[in-house]
Structure formats: structure tokens, C-alpha cells
Amino acid sequence: MIFFAIIYSNLTVSFAKADLMYRKLVTVSLIISSLITASCHKSGGTGNPAALVGNWQFVYMSYNTQASSIGVGTGIAAGENTKSFSSCNYKTIQNTGTITFTKDSVYWKSICYSSDYYLKGYSYTDGKLTDSFNNRNLVSYISGDTTSRYNALGRDSLSFSTSYMVPWFGGNKIAFNRIYGCRYSFKGDTLFLSTNAQETDPPQTIGNFTFTSSTSGTSVMALLKQ
Image 1 (cartoon, rainbow, N blue to C red):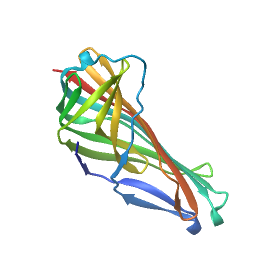
Image 2: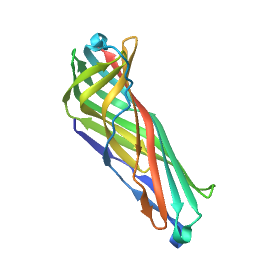
Image 3: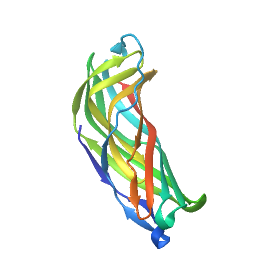
Image 4: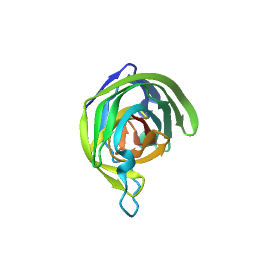
């Protein structure tokens, strides 16, 4: 599945440069592709996908994400520590497209949506608040059609042979995560596909600080039976 993203606003990222004893605010737009396998609950027995079979209208996706970055000073910044946290929670709008399940395959057709969300963040140096932001971001997504075989795992989980992509927001990056599995549940005529994901980046050195960053969160896709 191919996603095209139109980023209408930038994320403000604060980088510490202790050797100059000041911090510079840099406005950047980032689109980073990463591979993340969603955690998938497995239990004994063979799942029954009968309730999944049919045509489903894409209703919305919701997200709850958090990110953190911890910086440890070295050299002239030895003993100085920085921490930053960010989060966003939102539901997509202008949702279109359909999803069709057969007994062993799923067809994703023209899944499109927009997001209007606020990214909140806080930065601390040695425990003292040094910066905060609450930035509005408008993003639109258009996907192509794709097909994947799937297997039922237990009574509430699915694994896909081909990934489907959902956006993942956290920290100073926007990542398109390829999800290979999900939990599913029903409420009336609505089907919910839920994923959990997390990512820890390799340590990165900026000036006299070494940063370790991580992102985690959940996403839920809602589908209405046709």
C-alpha cells in the first residue's frame, strides 16, 4: 500500500547545544519511514474469521501516542541532563474507502483521511522546565489499493502477510509504520482493528549530549458493516 502525505505545518524541535550554553529552536518538517511490527496477542486454538467476512466502510482511525528523549551531557556538559516529552491524541476526519474481508484475504480500497491534531511537548534541563509547545498540524493521506492474506490467531487477533500502513506521530518525527498484525473486536455493526507499537531509536550525539529517544502508542481503526 502506498501512502502520499501532505504536511501542512511544521513541527518545532528543540535541540540542546550545551557547548555554546544555549538552545536553538529549529523548525523542521520530517517524514521518516520505519518498520514496526505491532504486538499481537496469540492464544491457543484456531480463530474463526467468519464474522469478519464482508464489506466494511472505513469510519475513522484514532491515535494515542507518546514520545520521550533523554540527553546525558559529556565533556564540558558532564553532569547536565535534559528530558523532553511529547504526546498527541486525535481521531481522523474526512474518512473514505472500504475494506473487504474474505475467509483468508483482506482488500484495502482507496483508504483516505485527514488529521487535524495538536502535538504537545515539554523540555526540561536538570529537572527545570525550559520549553513547551502546543503545535497544530494538518495532514492528509491518500492510499492505493492493496491485498493481503491473513491468519486468525486465537479468538481476537490477526496476522497479515502484507503490511498495511498507518501514521505514527511522536516526538520530532512522523513515521509511517507498516503494521503486520492487530487485535479485532466488534460492537454492534462496527469492527475495530487495534494495534500497539513502540520504537526506540539508536543513541544520537548532538554537541556534548547523547540522546536516547523512544515512541509508543496505540491506534484503532473503526469499520462499519455494509
